[in-house]
Amino acid sequence: MVWLFLAIPLAVELAWVFWPAANSFSLAFTRWNGIGAAEPVGTQNFVDLASDPIFRTALTNNVIWVVGFGGLSVLGGLALAVALNKPGRGIGLYRSAIYLPMVVSMAVTGLFWRVMYQPGGPISAGLDVLGLGSLERQWLADPDLALYAVLVAGIWRQVGYIMVLYLAGLKGCDASLEEAASVDGASSWQTFWHVVMPQLKGVNMVVFAVTVIDSLRTFDLVWAMTRGGPFNSTQLLSTYMFEQAFTAGNLGYASAIAVVIFVLAIGFIITYLARQARAED
Amino acid sequence: MSAPVLVAGRARPQRRRRRGRSPWLHVVMVPLTLAWVSPILFVLMIALRSFDDIAGRGLGALPASLTLDGFVGAFAGGGLLVALGNSLLVTAAGVVASLALSSWAAYALSRYRIPGRKAVLLVMLAGNLLPPQILLVPVAQITQSIGIYDTLFALTLVQVGFGIGFYTFVLHGFMRGLPEEMFEAARLDGAGAARIYAQLVLPLSRPSLAALAALATTWIFNDLIWALTVLRSETKFPITAALLNLQGGYSSQWNVIAAASLVAAVPTAVVFFIFQKQFVSGLLVGSNK
Image (cartoon, rainbow over all chains, first blue to last red; front, side):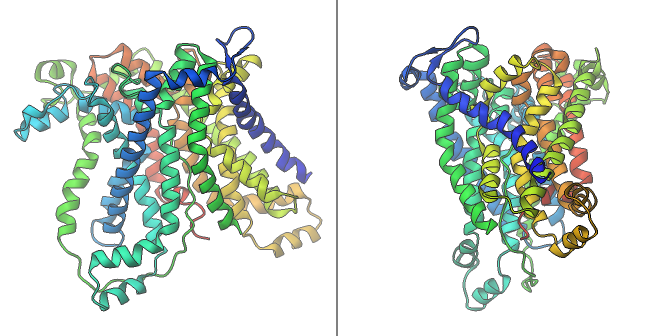
């Protein structure tokens, strides 16, 4: 009886997660358009990937994405968490405003920002008001700018999430240590860097792992805003994989890209799991 | 979708700082907060303007008059309403099924000596952390081969399968902490595993179930990639996917697009405001060990 309690959920996860994942690995070594039998091609897909300029763009963009989306969200989230840690007047309101975007889906976030970035839209109008009209650009149509325009939208949504994580971490910090440090004449910066930061080590690791995993997963936002364009300039590994699979019908090649994403993510997944395993003890 | 997270921190009683708060905080935070919510306000403003107003005075202008034309346009034809219904259906079924299944698994793993249970638990959690991309192609194939491709049932099933690992892990952490004496007393009264689950474990787990339900609702409702993977007919699309199509069809009617995206944002915003506490604690589940 008790075994059934475990067996049913486990079977569902095996069927819809582990079995498909295993299949992707074998598909990655084939050429397949979804109809008929998959033709084994050995490592040819990976050889092709190495010389595929769009794949390289996607890979570079993903690095920019991890550093930009990850780095700036973490810096912003941490700074806001520190600023809004102590209760006080207006603090609840500030906090709610910062994590409000989190409830909006990535797809809707994308649409919101498409509206913002339209020529003559709120951002251009805002620049006009500030007398900076010369800075106006075709934000999403300019291959040099589009990725960064999407990045801004991503950060807008992610900062609140990181802030919540750090607020929880700061709650666990020992306030008496901070007081002791300030009594000893440490500046706020020194107190933060030498007293608070070491206590946030655990949270930092979780945030780091989660940020990288999230960055590699990012799909909806780019799909909603640019679909990887213009001229593939905003292609991430996830969007290029999706396009190869479901637009071009190259299922084997797409699986090879998925394997690359998996390989890039697995180290961080293990880091995260190891930490949870220790917390379980 | 954000990867789930569990922060292991300990809450300590906090002593209030005696130092006065600097006014600079508000000097920085007021404009920043306004800037942060401004995209939502701008979209709301555009949704409330008429097409002629936008065409004549530009997208960036302040509204000359307010109208619900955008919302009327968004709901015209009924497509958006169908999509909203699809989303609500998949979300409700998905949340209930995921929490039911994962509470079974968590119950078995936390209250019975199952060999290798820690490994099972971590493997289940690992499944939820995998990049979805590694699952997309085979999942589409499997749904086709068992004849459920392009059904809301398939979408629900995929959502449940992918989420289970995380919910199980969190619920396990909670159920493990329930006092053993209560279980002994129930067993002495002759209650079997199923009755203990239904009458003891489920009612006691309500707080963590509520937090996970708030979180799962936003995840499933906000999903796009699984919908694009297992659905093809527009009439079956959830609202996220339907919105992107709408955008293709109404590319110049920004008031309609803005109104439709607000409609898509409202359900999760409502969940957020009603269950704000559960939502935030859902993001932090496991942090108060």
